[in-house]
Image (tube, rainbow, N blue to C red; front, top):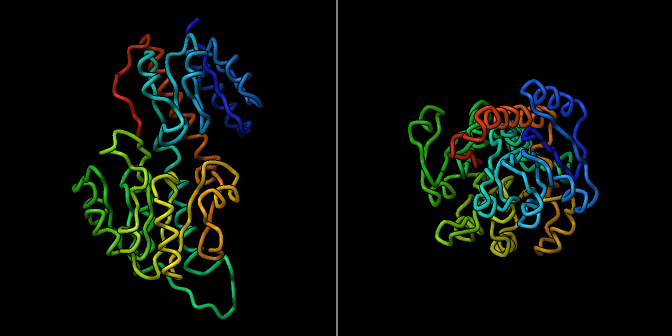
Length: 321
């Protein structure tokens, strides 16, 4: 049989979402199994006979792929694929794709909330604190992809000015959204708030996004600047961030880390002592029922198309952010 779908997660998944997913796969002639695993051994055993694998942030490394003897495709439920060894999977003839748009609205809404959090000093609410409105301020979006576009629409609806920068600028789309497209250096110079949405790329060196947001960029933001990173922690140079936060006591930063260990994240990156100006979130920005359901619906579409074509799907992979 070549119709076995494994939905694997180290964290619970809403039962209503799983029921909808099972029904959707069943209508397409696919059999789905859910594994909420507590050990790696469980996962390696379960994946042995899976043809299609759906994961969220779970690590799919070389050992995992070697154990998956009949695997044809890995679908990452969300944006990015940095938790998957894409190169090795491809060498094994395993397709890798994702659902980059499914959680974009949830992340964009979280960014709006984080802007309000800092603008109104919600970390330390005081009756006499004078905050500021977002209307009339300039938001810079570094990475104008799925999330960036959703964020732009919401920010414009709040009467903000929006500028964006992307490695592959699409000027026509930017104009259609009412957004000005600029280079990264200019983006940071113009903005009160920067929201980062670039994918994590580790290689090759000339295309790596590790530490992309460095001191030069951070020091260009307005003195009362706010930097929000809901992409991946690694795209911001945290050594440079510490320098900037120490020399500018009005600079603020929010980041979503890879797991629930926010205190450990602060400790590893030397980010203690910035209370009220630093917010480290657990992996939660895309955690809404709507985002989960949307990701599964998109995964059903991707897998059923591949299955119906006997594995001869379009070789172009989503791999969006």
